[in-house]
Image 1 (cartoon, rainbow, N blue to C red):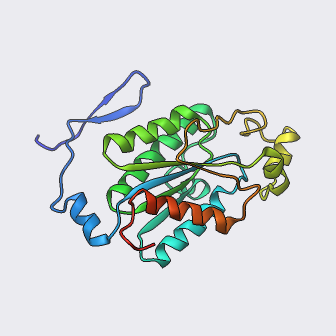
Image 2 (cartoon, helix red, strand yellow; image 1 turned 120 degrees about the horizontal axis):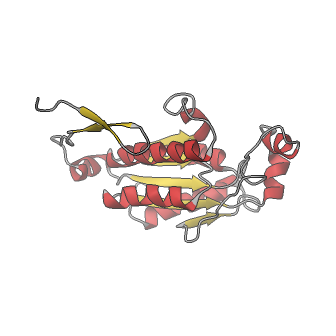
Image 3 (cartoon, rainbow, N blue to C red; image 1 turned 135 degrees about the vertical axis):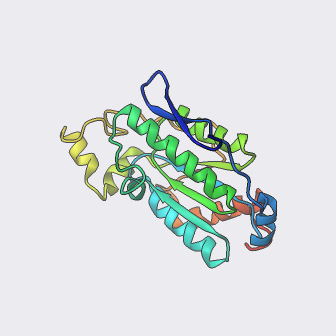
Length: 218
């Protein structure tokens, strides 16, 4: 039957939909951008646990919305309450976690929203996959390295995770017994161990203006 989704299995045994087709709407991306006065994009904040990603994402979202720019924050913990509540923290599940976020961020960006993701996303290959997903869709993607030394992150440690990881209570914790692969060529590096939050947010806003994301709203 036309439009009916069939299912199949790939080598991993995961059921996948087949015989599906992308349905175009009546509003083009560029019509939407014109009316919103900004161009959708994704700002991908990556860094060690407690490096300041969540704080920056929240403040940037607040600043953009106050200026009339549509923005939405996708936070690691929040996403695991719903969309990714079925995922744990094995390497494979972390990969899937980031894959799903890349897809969701792309949809937000396509809608004309500034999608702000705050995820450790420790592996280069996963972040590069999210970038390619946006580039293939001709959407802007800005990787931002929230660069704080592990000593600073451990001193902050708002959830007490570093202490538990050092004690062996938490296994596979990024930065302790699981690797973090820093970005090679990020669009922006923010030294959150040295600079205040407001200065970092100002640099993010300046980047959006320089890259032509907004039309005179900043």
